[in-house]
Length: 365
Image 1 (cartoon, rainbow, N blue to C red):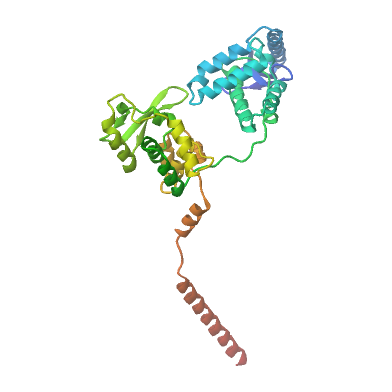
Image 2 (image 1 turned 90 degrees about the horizontal axis):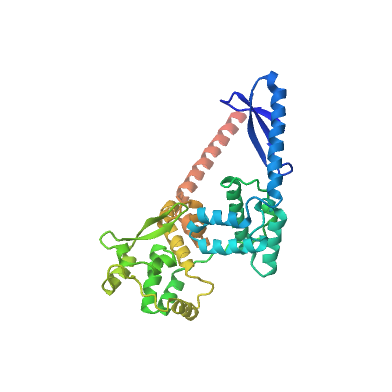
């Protein structure tokens, strides 16, 4: 425990660990004037503040306070339910609740509990990436419990609970595989596939696209983009190939109806991949392919806008670079004329020879 002064405040502040042994430090005003004469008085007030907080924490740790279920409900309503991956978050939160117990006091949860769930998930055969995603969800919820609910939660060492992951998955296709898939799909599947490649839209955005979301004169469509605060419209620009798909289907539906025929979509897609011999390629990889193709001709911030990402670091995970991309970029670098370089070297050699001959004549004379 120590005393400190804060700019703009006339009082001593007490800095101490609360609760003791948690490595969590807080500072509170003692309401004692910050003068050397009042230092002893401020220290006594600081001890009383620390004792009061320790007693409060001890009462909550006995079994009262906020339960695990209350923390999960607060995190779900304030953040998780508004995310694109809310379904996955819900499953992770259910797993956390089953592991800890709904009625357990969340202030008692510590590193051993997190490590226990990590080990349990691994023993059940879940991959390390899935385990780490679950821990990331739990870590965000833990932060909400501390900052928004104001609970005296324990400090958790998340790093030692995480599991080693393999290198990130990189999958996109080139033109030959795209053409093979196109030949293997029925007409209704071809339209969905081409539109996805040309716009980078997510699967649910394409399959749920209705005609009132399409602006043919402006050559663009709008889709719903979720963020933490609200669902917003995101406009997608359509290139000529995407517009051909829309024009082809324009007379097949009324306003409000779906643009694409989603009948047997999953069966058509799986059969086309097998027939085309395209392995380990999901529908979401179409979005990665669109980003990679666009990144070869446009700056990364343009790709970010097309995909609707809030952070360009996310876009960097979608645009992949191959060795041929590097070779093509290197070939476009400015080059020096080899002939000019040779002529320059020849002139330098002649000048050096003249200097050497001059020096020799001077020495002989």
